[in-house]
Every structure is written in structure tokens, then in C-alpha cells.
Amino acid sequence: MSGISRLGVVGCGLMGSGIAEVAALRGLDVTVAESSPDLAVAGRDRVAASLDRGVRRGKLTESDRDQALARLSFTHDLGGLADRQFVVEAVAENRQVKLEVFRQLDKVVSDPEAVLATNTSSIPVVDLAVATGRASHVVGLHFFNPVPVQRLVEVIPALTTGADTLARARAFAAEQLGRTVVQAPDRSGFVVNALLVPYLLAAIRMVESGAARVEDIDSGMELGCAHPMGPLRLLDLIGLDTAQAVAESMYEEFKEPLYDAPPLLRRMVAAGRLGRKSGRGFYVYDG
Ligand code: 3HC
Image (tube, rainbow, N blue to C red):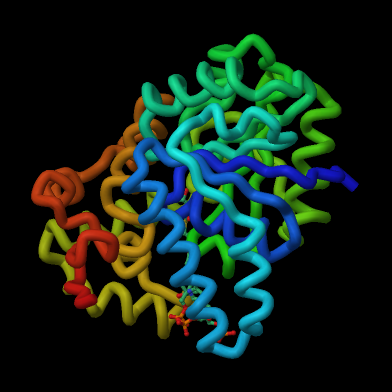
């Protein structure tokens, strides 16, 4: 057992809120840090809405929901994570922002044995590790969206990650969060995105070139290959800005043309068509 009872989560967007929810449902005391009071309130609302949805769908009892909410606290100050034994960073996929979070976590988390994990999809874990004075305690822990549903976690040891940190991260994900763990190399894209991103970008290029319609591409993969979502619907779920950021990191690392974000993706992000979270991406969403 990894024996973590006090978890910190930095960032309460799509991924951070899901990680916080799963951990609280599994009995951990969770403190979530956001960058402003408004974002902390929005983060709490996001977790509460997801727990309510679980109750409506008969997956959780009202008591499960209430107990999970009681285990969650929200702060807009990273200093609120001082007593945490394990922290998962899940802020936007932006190198500078993540580097700054790790520099700050290094200062505020008081237990020198605490594990500092990043949910990055594509930024080298080692870069975040060496931004701290405790590189051996930093590891990658990559969740999948929607976190309450997807059972996989990629655990990514950087060159600097200590064997004990890796073992604790694996045990935390597997035993405490009940996830299936895949160990992945610290190469941009790890295992899953290295395969998924070129496929998603290929679907965008099919739309861009006029080769096929959005609905036909998605129906093709949903009904022809039994994917739960076609690639364009999935891009809308992931967020087009996140998909672009992941593709850019992968392209920067490998200079592989298949990882190069196509112009249509860049234009949609520039236009604010980010997918479900902005109400419009390849599809239009209400509410
Ligand atoms: N929280 C909790 N449960 C949820 C949920 C959420 N946000 N969204 C869906 N669910 C549950 C529902 O309760 C339902 O459970 P049930 O069947 O036991 O009642 C089940 O999931 C199916 O949900 P729905 O019926 O509402 O909708 P769908 O059948 O269309 O499923 C989906 C939605 C789970 C999102 C499914 O389409 C899916 O798995 N899509 C693929 C997602 C995927 O590939 N994710 C990986 C993205 S890549 C990534 O995250 C990496 C990053 O680095 C880019």
C-alpha cells in the first residue's frame, strides 16, 4: 500500500476535478488548489455537479456524494498544500505554467518525502523534476478524460525519479485509486498519445481537405471500429486547445510531420472553438 491519506491536486479543470473526485470517493482527504477564489469556486461546482450526476444515474448514493464532498477542500493558495503527502499537478498543458507550479510546490510542501506528480500529457517530466530541489520525488501520473470513467493511468518515471517514488506512485494509482497502471517512457506522448494524436490529427486533415464530413468520419470509427467516440467528437471532449498543445510538444520533440498540428486545428483554437468546454468545436453544444 502507498498509504497516502492527504492528497493535493493543483488545478481543477477537466482533469484536476476528475482526479479530485475519484480520490475523494475512494476515501482520501483532498485539498484542491486553484489560482483564484473564483476558479476555486468553479472547481468545487464542477466536482459537485459530477457527483450529482453520479447520484442521478444511480451510481452513487447521496451519502457517497456527501461524504466525498466533505473530504474535499478548496484553496486559491498553493501554501494550502503544505501538509500533503502526495500532490498531483493538473494545470493547463503549458510548460511555463507547470514549471512555476513545481518551483512553488518545492517551496511549500513541507514533507521532503512527499511525491510530486504531474498529469502532463507531453511535457518532459524531467524538466519539471529539475525545476525542484527534489527531482527524485517527481514522477508523471497521466490520467484520461473523463477521469471517473477511464481506468488507465500512465506512470512515467523521469531519469531522475527514485525507485521508491516510482513504487509509491504505482501503488497510489493502482491500490488507492483502483486504476490499471501502464508504465510509460518519458518521451513526449508517452504510450497512449503517441498512438492517439496522429490518428486525431489525421481526422482533422480529412475534414480540412474536404475528403470526408465530420459526422461521416465519426460514424465510421464508432460503427466500423466500435470506438465509443469518433475522433472529432473525442477532440471536442479533450479540448482543441489541449490537443494542439499536446501535438506541439510532440512535434517539438520528434519533428515528426504526423504530429504537426494542422492549420484547421490552429484556426479553430484561435477562434475559440475549443470543443465542449466552449460550447462549440466540430459540433455545437448547448448548456
Ligand atoms: N463522470 C462520471 N461518469 C461518466 C462521465 C463523467 N464525466 N461521463 C460519462 N460517464 C459514465 C456514465 O455515467 C455512463 O455510465 P453507465 O453506462 O454505467 O451508466 C458511461 O460513462 C457512459 O456515459 P454516457 O452514456 O453518458 O455517454 P457515452 O456512452 O457516450 O460515454 C464517454 C461517454 C465515457 C465519454 C465515452 O464516449 C468514452 O469513453 N469516450 C472515449 C473517451 C476517451 O477516449 N478518452 C481518452 C481521451 S485522451 C486523454 O484524455 C489524454 C489526454 O492527454 C489528451
